[in-house]
Amino acid sequence: MSCSNCVISPTPALTAACISATMDSMSSVAAVVGLMSIFNGLGRIGWASFSDFLGRANTYTLFFIVQIAAFYFLPSITSILLFQIVLYLILTMYGGGFATLPAYIGDLFGTKELGAIHGYVLTAWAIAGVFGPQMVAHLYQSTGSYETVLRIFSGIFALALAVSILMTIYMIVARNRMTAVTIFAFDGLDFIRKQTNLLTNDGKSAINTKLDRENPGYAQLMRKCSYSGEALLFGRDYETYYAPLTDEQGELKGAIFVGNQK
Image: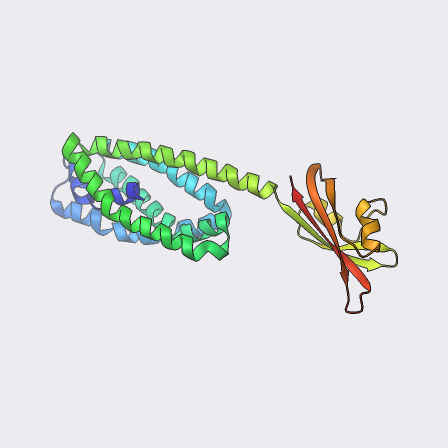
């Protein structure tokens, strides 16, 4: 947040410092600054839409990779056109990061916690908006060069990239360590699988198949009792739980299975 904010406040001075040798007047600098909000807005629409296809985690990873290079090379650019392209690309990602953030939080923590977590993040964003430019000013006064400042922030982006990759790995592992739930209907002497939350091919192919009568849970369900144990499902170890489903008269109507991957 601070990294992206840091390029907004000092943009007039940064623009003049980086390409002053080829600028005719400060009106050109003003024109560059004037277009910033447009690309910020375009980024919010464009990157948020693109993230629906690429995935939020992958979108943020792309942001960090591009901005590592952009912040590193921006101060050494002398071409007006190339400088504006890189600057506006950074601004689109600043806007895109803001617009994509709520959906990314939902992917990580679920929609139940979205409001509270998003509030905390917006508070951090506001703090970054205050301290980011101040950090730039302090570093510039210490080093006397925007080149050093932006390359420090490029290094911070590299750290953010590492965190983003770790979060992506965490999401993959969390999805693989899932809870399986299956609803059975009781028909004659068999329990028939009717619904499951497993959307994989293995889960879909199990629909309308019977619970094996040799399964230790079968005998307990027939007695209208629950059963817990362990089983190998789709090549993975699960802690399993079976419970009978009865009507108001106590007649056996089905069963529910819950399996937690170990």
